Length: 261
Image 1 (tube, helix red, strand yellow):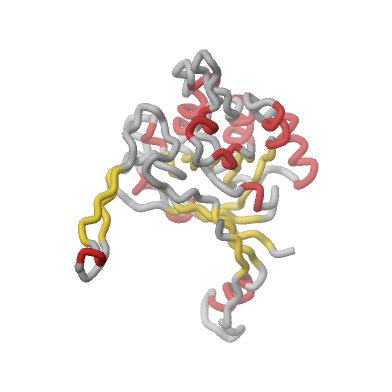
Image 2: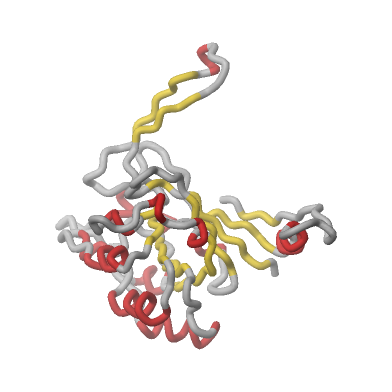
């Protein structure tokens, strides 16, 4: 986990945004919200495992190291653009960088999930958050904190299947997603578990909540980490990924800028 404070020597007389950055950098903590991906990690059952090949290897006498990675786009902590579920919708290269740094809202249901792995957020959870912090900001990123990332990278613990093969894992709820997108006007969502929909739904092939999100021309980050290290309100999230032309998903690097103190 990367959870560090950083300061800078940029002076107040620096040009442009440098002075503002110098002031900000001394007041924030950086928290990595990303799992490091690797072969054998938890993943959607229909996907093949990651493969790596050392093309150039300094241990073999080459002058540098180069790896070839063979993996699906939806691998580890990753971004789902609208085209992942909606034909003709926005691809990764069409999501502007202005959407990649956003106010971060953390909706915490981890205590309820600890008692009931099938738990989902309710309108009351959002109302309680807004009673503490004010309205969910338009254009924000809302992350669902469930505590599920503590199970990473144990595939069986992440899936949490019963004897009948049904997965018992948390997910979003339709009422909360409708409020966030249709009333609050958020830009994107994220979560710690493998899917937007709870495991009881995905076990029978129901991915309707994920389709709902992407059909709104919004994007999401799946398999987030360290949401217990960031505040419910007041932080910023930076979500980045490569820019494949027409890309339908890719591993992402996501981190939060949290106010000190």
